[in-house]
Amino acid sequence: MIDTALNYLNNGSAITLLVLLTLSFYFIICFWLFIYRFLSLKSLIFNERKSLDDLTSRSATLSPMSSLNKCSNSVHTKEILHACEINIIKDASSGITWLSIIASTSPFVGLFGTVVGILESFAKFSNESKVGFSVIAPAISEALVATAAGIFVAIFAYTFHQILVRKVYELNTYLKAQSQILIAKG
Image (cartoon, rainbow, N blue to C red; front, side):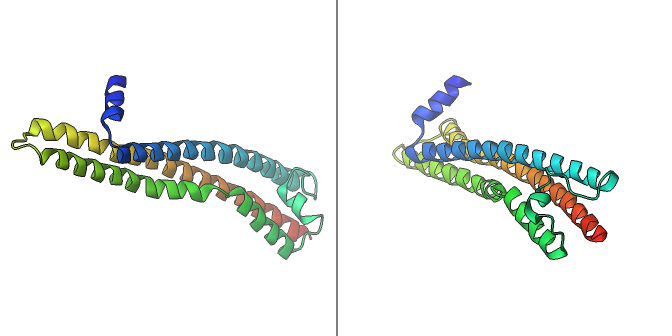
């Protein structure tokens, strides 16, 4: 397996290697964004869930750990709370768009690498008088590695995007519930 990968890298063209380098960069960014945003959202959701529990059970005030408390400065008008919610969700969802961009562009980057690889293979074959399937098949399969890499990266980016969007929705639900309670207790 490692020998095959090294052989591929040694025989690959500059464009193919650039495509694989770009997809590797996408993959690293994808995982970094997911881990960073997931941990941040998990912490925010925990604080808002605890604040909502406190608000509905014991006290009539927000928890000091709540993002709404930090934003609204004890003035709980509908407009201020709504503006706070929007600001918190905007901050919580930063970076998620990049996962969507990576998910949608990485298959095209991989496809570009495949097309260039196939074109280069055909250019090599044009100098030979007889080319059999045993010569064409390995060249085409090497070119298809770029498409496979692009799809591989896209699967992770799309999955991570969906998980984080769901976490932002969950955070938004807790924020709205707290706002509604504060307005009702007004």
